[in-house]
Image 1 (cartoon, rainbow, N blue to C red):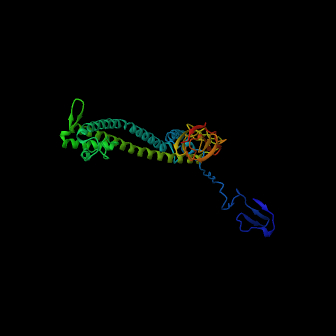
Image 2: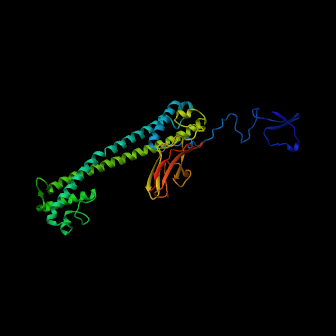
Image 3: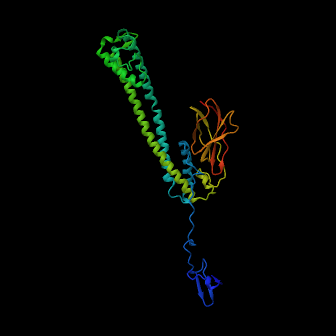
Length: 363
């Protein structure tokens, strides 16, 4: 409490902390009994809330699935170590790790389903090859009766496009072998069975069944892969959401320079380090003056700068685009030109060192 000395016309009588006594005018200060804080002043007992920040720039969610899984392993380990001490509630190991395991399991099942396509595709390829051989043999033997050139006499055989020749697609060959089975059944005089060549309705039926079974096997394998891909993608979306939420909650609990960030596999927002050099940069000519540039990303990068240097034209690399993506198509390059492509990672600390130049010839 302090005594005030000022003219009466400056006295603020509606201030609840000012009172007048015979021996003077006094004002209560914070901590005095009876002190009334103004509406915009926090109570001494209240701890100011930490200002929320967006930690996306310092710790972006990995774009590639493999990197997301690796980063989430580190995240789960950090939760196991620190979640109680720092007060994580929404994103605990018990909630986070099952989503990580779901993605890992879903990814493994999808990859296994791709491997499972090999056997039916091999069977289909063999069955189709046998069908092509049969059709070629039929054309050779039937030409003696029906002629070498297309005519109405060939219509019933099922050869498509008014052409005396092997159909050009698997679907067309499958249809043709089914029609030949019917044609030879109706025209037994067109059948041939010798030690060197067999063109009969019975053989056509066997080949048609074999190709049909193989096609059904491929279709079933594709359906299985499609279903497993949906499961994997759903698990990935759920993990991405949880990963982003975890980074934000960790940011609410830790100071920007707290070393515990590293235990979660994250960068400290206070770190001044620029991104590492982008890894595995490739450049592929796409035709029409376009070049597709891809990278596996760079540690600590939240975005990327893409540069081109047309040999013999540009003295220095020219920045083409700044984007979040780990791939970008550079367009309208001169056909036939030799171009050097470089990529540099970017974060809050600035641009990192560029990748080594990748040389591509524009088509």
